[in-house]
Image: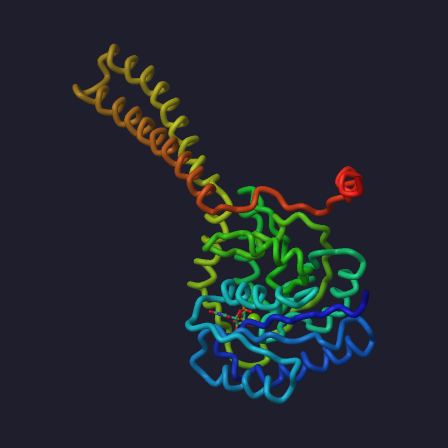
Length: 325
Ligand code: UDP
Ligand code: MG
């Protein structure tokens, strides 16, 4: 049971500064875990080079030559963190029983992997690494992250609070994830959709030891927009609600305008102007909302997500009897 292969997937984009220490630490960790019998000695590290322009790939080649537990995948261009993660998961799903994804800078506590593996052995398919607090973040990043998580929740997107992409997944969970054929990846929103037994482990995140963040504000924002628009069609519904609201306001204004008209308190033309303004506005928004509903449906269909995930199937006795007869 405990002789199962772990694969550590590490996306790397221009990470030559941190890679030497990361590689050393991860290898020591693997040795420790296999010595204590938590994982098989066949376990490995998969570095995914996301189109780096520095010496990252040659370092990876060097590490792979020096230690057979290290391997690498080089992507042809920069496709972004989420796609790089998926490339690594796809590669590792071919042989690993469990896969941990972790950032190259090891800001997330790598030693926690042992606990994750324990949870896996206890029967969890997905183990989320969750940050205890955000002390190492700037005030700005902390506040925006908080606002983002609560907005996501209000829009009906399931995601684990304070969890980035540091997680362990079982082989079957990864295979299931790979059935989600969508292009706009937001893995931390997709993984909770799998529905397997999950656990959370807490850790403190440290600051990046070398190099700089590959997630500037602009990338962070577009990631957030992706997260919302890939999972929720509620913004479209809001347009419809707004349209209905405007039409109701138009009715109120109709009463007001007629009263004003008959009591001769208006200049000529005002009544029809103001009425048509609100009424047409309401109609246009309702129209947009209805069109949006259909586009939302098309969007969901186009994603072609699996409709269900099977957790377990019991042996079929009827089949066996038939086979014996
Ligand atoms: N990364 C990547 N492709 C990109 C940007 C980032 O593979 O286009 C990797 C990067 O090498 C790191 C991880 O994604 O391993 C997270 O990036 P970073 O640590 O810069 O993000 P932060 O911790 O600042 O949010
Ligand atoms: Mg980082």
